Image 1 (cartoon, helix red, strand yellow):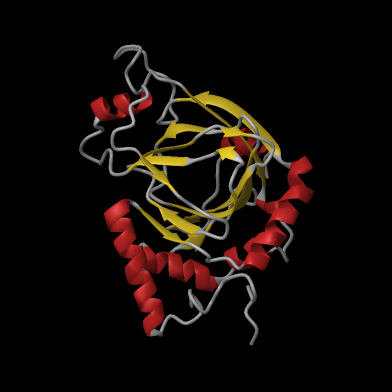
Image 2 (spheres, one colour):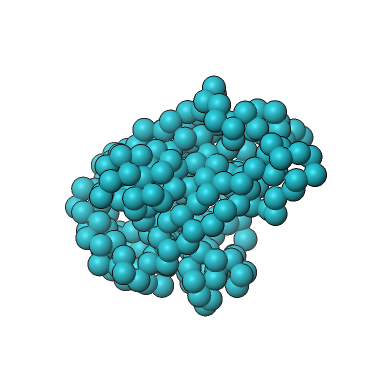
Length: 266
């Protein structure tokens, strides 16, 4: 039987359709090692060049329907708290701007949608994260998005609210658009405000710039790693997809957050 995501993934190198194989187990082990050692696992060339090309063409077609968001926020996505002082991490504001193409605008035949909606990928991501089960998001807007960073767009320094994120890269910007992160900067017992403050005020010690390439799938632990996308410069945008999973079925954004990131509710 043909796979729903036929031609989308380089299955010779990344046999996500064959969990009983030694190669699959080696791949999962390698990803777990990367996550443990670096806070991120990257699979370069996961998507085929043809799939990447198709997604770039689709992104170009859908860009007029993308929602442009531009906001200031703290690294914690909470209201700024000036009480501890103006240079405290919870007081320092960051800037984020991007365009988002929502899940319900991505055609059912698009490579990334065919891949995202496959149980093979969901099971593989769960195995990498050592979870017995993961579920695809039930959000009609946020489950899967195409993110476009044009000239001047960026993601300010922040910690994710979710423990992990899954991204697929399609195109790097002509200049800028770099992914910087400081792995394991905080944990559930220590917010590590002095080092967070150091990074937010421009310090680069401990900050890692992650090299990437079109077709790369990344599993990132962003809840404890401060991270950003630097401002894009030039006419070629940075384009990637974010794939959303959770440990419980039926996961959705609230309407306020839908409105903020997609300009509408669903």
